[in-house]
Length: 307
Image 1 (cartoon, one colour):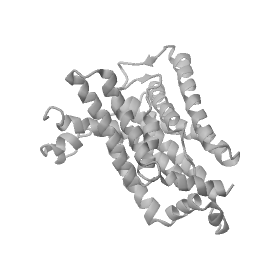
Image 2 (tube, rainbow, N blue to C red):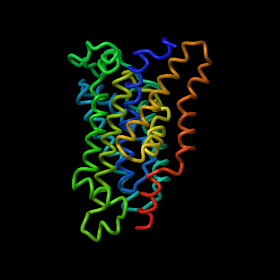
Image 3 (cartoon, one colour):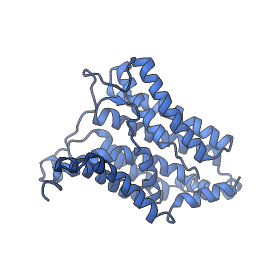
Image 4 (cartoon, rainbow, N blue to C red):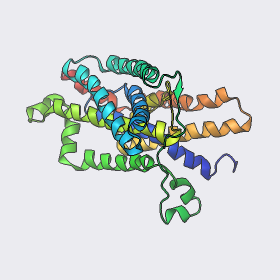
């Protein structure tokens, strides 16, 4: 039992949960303005590829992260324009974005790097690991919390900031009003469309960071479809957390733990196919039990009635 649940398991959990948490926060802010962003998977995938491409072109990991953020923001504008201006079905648009991202990254991988399947450069520098002073010397806690990339800490800090913004600021109240009752918000002079665009762009920023963590903070390479469903898991984490940042953190930690636990089980002579299924089984179970407790349904209903 000690071999199953040790410090390294929870350390890897924090590393694995970061892309899911960042993408889930992006989905939560979209849900708060009445947009059900199914395209999180595609946004994270574009972010992962853009981070590698930026690192290759610019030779600096921090500039690569900025490059990834900008690319995903531009990509998310497609979702925003079609969903907000053209008023297309957000589910269809999101699924289309996922397919577009998968095809676009595969094409660019072959067109730019002239490789198939994966790109890896042994000279490419990944994200540094930060050791937190004082905390790193604390038994158990130091081994879990310290020694991660900056984006791991940024993800949890972003959740706290989003919680304060949504529930403690005037701007946050207006954003929530734009999603909960767009007609009433517009009658009060709140620029609903502008707020929705801002939310989608912020979602792009968070998904760009998620992709950068995936390709630069964990493996320092890009492979086709490397998100492997993390965007959809992030979507479930958004629903399970009721689009509340603290709830999203809790649900993301659950999925991150199951992902890390499934990897750990592979060392105990269990079939790899079984262990790889665990995170997705937990996702399906969570969707089944919490299918009627989603803030997204209310947001969609209110947004739909405004149209």
